[in-house]
Length: 419
Ligand SMILES: *[C@@H]1O[C@H](CO)[C@@H](O)[C@H](O)[C@H]1NC(C)=O
Ligand SMILES: *[C@@H]1O[C@H](CO)[C@@H](O)[C@H](O)[C@H]1NC(C)=O
Ligand SMILES: *[C@@H]1O[C@H](CO)[C@@H](O)[C@H](O)[C@H]1NC(C)=O
Ligand SMILES: *[C@@H]1O[C@H](CO)[C@@H](O)[C@H](O)[C@H]1NC(C)=O
Image 1: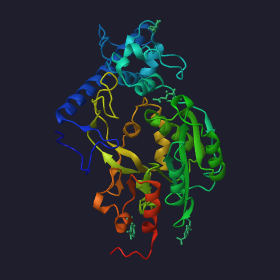
Image 2 (image 1 turned 90 degrees about the vertical axis):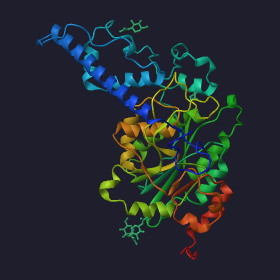
Image 3 (image 1 turned 120 degrees about the horizontal axis):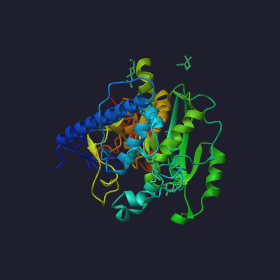
Image 4 (image 1 turned 90 degrees about the horizontal axis):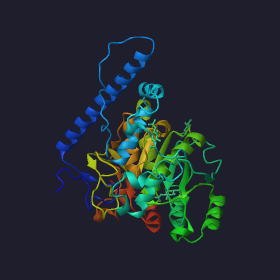
């Protein structure tokens, strides 16, 4: 059924897994994309030509328009992305500015609300099956353009001693025990193996409207004690994880831009921090700049089955996914994190966070590198309780807080003979 199914044991779709597809479609898609590029170029040409006709120089002019009104994709995300690509292309942007209103092809006219944080009223009419989409997916689409949310808790001193490695852990407000287990094990901040390690937990808000108990007081208390909690005021749900990525990168650029490396992970992974540091010691200066390693998923495409967590309708996105690292955890350089933040402005938010990061990498002309030490699909059952197995892993998903505390001494114990 899945001819190029990934190498992972167990259920392949567990986290961030997406259907590998048929290569022919890939080729067809590439051809389509190239056609699109050609058409874009022609549009630009047509405009420039028209501009120069009305203005100073004269150019030999093709006598009719090259573009057709139906160039645009019918899928909402793709359409938004085409628009953004256009705006960020300096040649076209100039052409756009010089084009008299009314002469724009419809698909280039941005008819969205002027304030990107207003619900996007176009969505229900532009997406044919909007009304039958899952509620949270509808919410994602309505707020897809908004990227600014207030930061309610912002510990000022996390990066005071410039970290060699910043551990950025995606968590949810109620997961107090997971955060504490991480602080007591792999996320202990301070000097590890003669390197400065810092940790932050990334949280959105939980609201009574979603039937969450009021945990704000407890969270403030926790933040006061540990000074490692970042809290934004947006609704913390699965489809808003991409927002968490984007907001974190923005914070990173302001607060921690000199950290050498960043490990981004979920609060249910176990990280072998000493092993990660050891790995980083060996990364050459030249490789550091573009370093991005994790558990890489290649040649994937969106799921079209409504019952799956990762379902994406064709009315929203068509195309294949770029290679991406499973969002359970990956490691990148601080330098690349800063550039990713820039690149993310040029990529429309996508509801699956790790795919989105892959898209941003692609914008930079990069791809993640696979590393066997990252096991976001876990290791084999029979290995789970074998202490020596953990010695050579960098990251494994998933472990409960109690499992973390049980396994951690195995990672650290110098007496353990693993020959
Ligand atoms: C863009 O669309 C809006 C609403 O449909 C319309 O009022 C406006 O004239 C259009 N602008 C251009 C430049 O075509
Ligand atoms: C510890 O790190 C510092 C600076 O990073 C370095 O100068 C020093 O030699 C290191 N010490 C050891 C024992 O590796
Ligand atoms: C994402 O957060 C915004 C701001 O709180 C919220 O309006 C929207 O409903 C959230 N989206 C999802 C899919 O939960
Ligand atoms: C790093 O390099 C040292 C010395 O070459 C080697 O002993 C060690 O195994 C390497 N560590 C990793 C994680 O590759």
